[in-house]
Amino acid sequence: MTIELIYELSVIVPVLNEAGEIAELFATLEAQRGISFEVILCDGGSADSTQQHAGELAGSCPHPVHFIRTPRGRGCQMNAGARCARTDVLLFLHADSRFSEPDALSSAVRAFREQTQTSTAPVAARFALNFRRQHATPSLAYSFYESKARLNRADCIRGDQGFILTRSFFQQLGGFDESLPFLEDVRAAFAIEKQVAWTLLPATISTSARRFETEGFYERQVINAIIANAVHLRWDELFPALPELYRCRTESGRLLLFPLLTGIRALIAGHNAVWRRRFWLATGRYVSGNIWQLFFWLDVRRAFREGHQQTAAPGCWSRRYVRFLEPITRTFPAALVTAWAVRIWFRWILATSRREMKTATGTNRTG
View 1 (tube, one colour):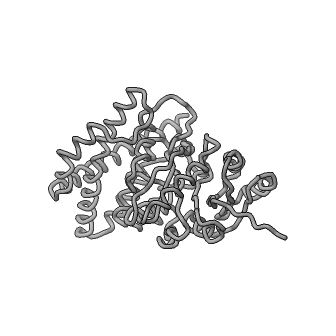
View 2 (view 1 turned 30 degrees about the vertical axis):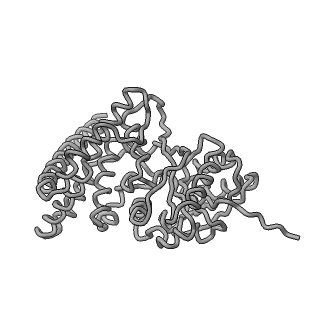
View 3 (view 1 turned 120 degrees about the vertical axis):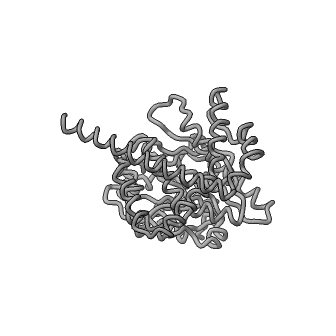
């Protein structure tokens, strides 16, 4: 008689040229205890030895591993993985995600199921986030982003935290958006928040900071801010026009802002005056609505100076913002003033990045 094993979780991982990450991914999953799960690797067309390494490692893995080929694009890859999953609980995980505790998955699924049983609405959950950096020196900048990831706000939640959903809720959402090669996590986070409140799981996940360290922390954050605004405005023409905005992690190198900002300026200039006015006003509204981050940063800085690396609780500065300033930021004058401030900021960034590029080019020629 054949006994069919019952798994508690399907771990769905989109991969693309991840030969350098696959061994550590298997190691972190093999170290998990107290839970049975399957692993589904969704390959978007790797040209390296990802499949070969996965096949070799799958033989000794205590959990069943399925390797499927899909069209490129994380949304498309994860949707394909979900269709192959054999459990009712889905975890969408990145290839560079790691767990430091052997009970991370078991405690997460236990907490997820407990909330599912007591809630009348669907449940969507993600892990607290830490960055793995080359240098372990405490960093206020990284502490700020790790703290933001602990807030139950869709605009602070990203796929590198791992998304846990039931199959039925995932199907109700319509899966991940496949229209763009990335941003599927951002759009999913907002789509989920429209229906349910996000839950923070009692476990921590870590993700590689290699992109920030390779591309430049400042440069990546400038581009991320522009991407976030474009997502909010549904300015989708930006991404196919400038694919370098978000390169494959394995293809990353130092990020040059000037060519990207020049391309963005050209796209905006290509529209008529009415469109441009609407674009900048909508941008002003979006940025004005995110002024809260400045005050949360002050709270994180205070906690950081007191020796706390992360905080998920808004402090006195955030409370003052909510009490005194938040109503003002929602007004039309605030949006108008912020729109002009963003235009000035954009021109300043464009000018400084141009000078930096000229300086770098001159140095290379001299060398």
